[in-house]
Image (cartoon, rainbow, N blue to C red):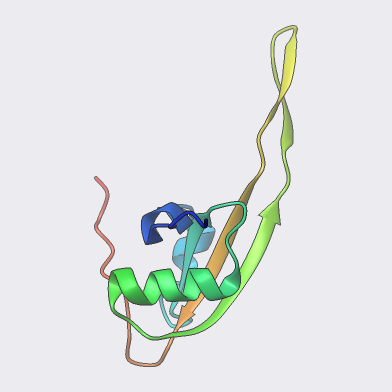
Length: 99
């Protein structure tokens, strides 16, 4: 019995940083946080299904956890997995402007 995985379970949220927005221009790349067990094929299928675009390439990166301190208390910020998705020529995603 296999559990059905929703496309929104694979793509958790977009990564909103200056570096990730630099790739949205002429490189036509978008960055998403993804599920820990998601594969490149699943990420490609999810992006194509949700946004109705053609995906050329998917790169997956495991981001490590980082040590953090607040006064005497120390701990770690959990790591995550992200995917950089390059869209085919002529395709793009509409990004909402944050205020």
